[in-house]
Length: 445
Image 1 (cartoon, one colour):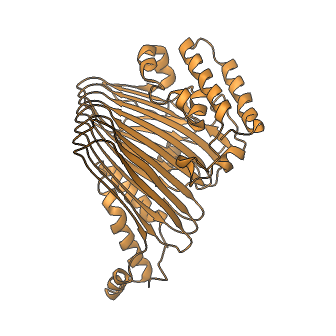
Image 2 (cartoon, rainbow, N blue to C red):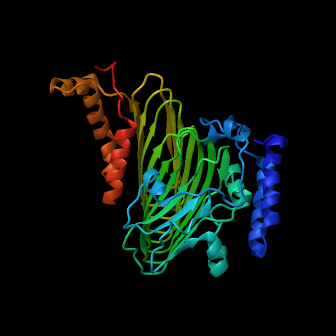
């Protein structure tokens, strides 16, 4: 998986420029960044697919071969009205907004009662807490090339600390926006969330950008749920169809903690979501849901892993995909039940609706069980609407397009209906309908 030297050199120049621009940062952070760069220089991007199971069905070559500019000043501004137009927005949501990877104070409105701020500010004001959690779930020595590169260029991002016993009244929106700078560019968003014992929060993590622009978003999110904490998390991938996005999320759960996640993904040229949840104490539970939609020649890859490390844990994973055109979707990952993790209750399922004969889906859920007295299962399906379903709709006087839209809504609704934030659910329902407007199933008619 070693990358060509020419590719590494493109990033090396940017890395040296970043280090030269920084002054007064903690020594531990500089050492972390240096370790991450050494890791990236050693392994590069994961372009080798033979024997590389996590990237078997996704070709990272187009990303590795492209040249992306990195702006130290985070150039690019976005008006308030533009941000509202290209991303989900509710004035009742407190928010941290980042434009091209840098915190935008004018667009942001942090909540009260918690530490919610830019990572750059948190490093200045509470460096010890940040140091205790940053990169603990993504150590550079074990990171893949994308995580290592993000850590090497770590400079800003979102930091959220919910104190013990505190519950946020409204969803907190972490919004990462990319502007069209006229040339391919890269940003390295970072999210660090720490939920103290018996705290609770709803967090919406959104990525959005202009249609037609080519750019790379290399994002890393780390969440720690201490004993009894609860986080409801929504991750929205709403970037343009010519963009690249590689997102890595790591979640660590303490005793009796609860993590629920709902992902909504529109297809990038190449989009990837790598999520791993570790239930490292008895009584933890997680519920992971997702809906992905691809068309044209877009590619989306969901690589989801759940690690049951301790007994009496429960997990549910339910993803659905809708594919059209010449697009491709990948779903893979593992539920791991470690020795001693008795009484684990886990199930994962991936269902795909294939609207075009030219679309392709590769679904490979798996189980690894090393404990007795567990209840685990998995399943995967892919196919089109049945002729009977379409005939029934047509017999009620609906044309092909209207019938198709109703059937799609029924398929997607099982995921969308699980979105507990009403305004967000309404937004996603409308976006789903707009994305698939005009799609028909002529062959099934």
